[in-house]
Image (cartoon, rainbow, N blue to C red; front, side):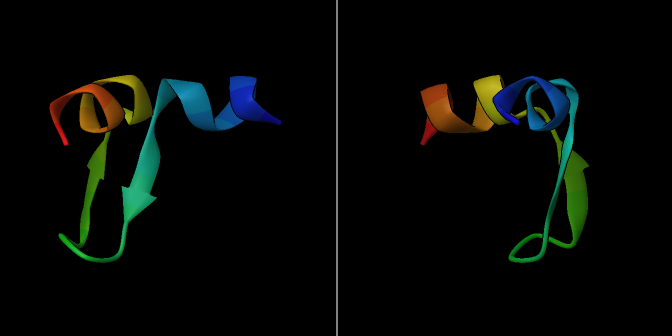
Length: 27
C-alpha cells in the first residue's frame, strides 16, 4: 500500500500532486 502512494500522492490541502517521501521529510 505504501509503495503505491510512495511514488506520488494527491495532497488535498495543497490541491497538488507531491511526493510522499518528500512531503513527509519536509514537513
